[in-house]
Length: 151
Image (cartoon, rainbow, N blue to C red; front, side, top):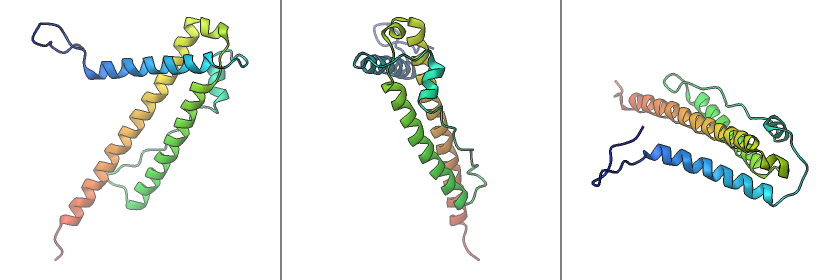
C-alpha cells in the first residue's frame, strides 16, 4: 500500500513498511556482524540454529481481560514477562550464533535466518499487543465496577 504523495507528486511509503524494512536490514546487519567476527563450527540449517538456541519459547495462553479476575491477570502478566525474557534470550542466541563462510555465502541460508528472526520478532509483537488489549479490557471493566455507586 502506498500513501498519496506530498506537494511535488512523489509517493511516500507508509511508516509500517519503513519499520519492517528497517527491522529486516537491522537483522541482516546484526547477523553478518556476529558471523564475521567469529570462526566457529558450522550449523547445517535454520532448524539446527533453532535447536542450538533451545527452541522457540511458547507464548502464555491468553487470559480474557473482560472476564478474568485480578489473580488471573497477574498470572498472565507474569507469564508475559517470562515469555518476553525467554524470547529476547532466544533472539540474542540467533544473532550471536556463528555460521560458516559457506553458509554466509549462501543467499538462501541468509534469507532463511533473517526470515526466521523476523517471524520471531513479529510473534513477539503480536503476543505483546494481544496482552495489552486484554489488559485494557480488564482495566476498563475494573473502572466500570469502581464507578458504580454503593447503595
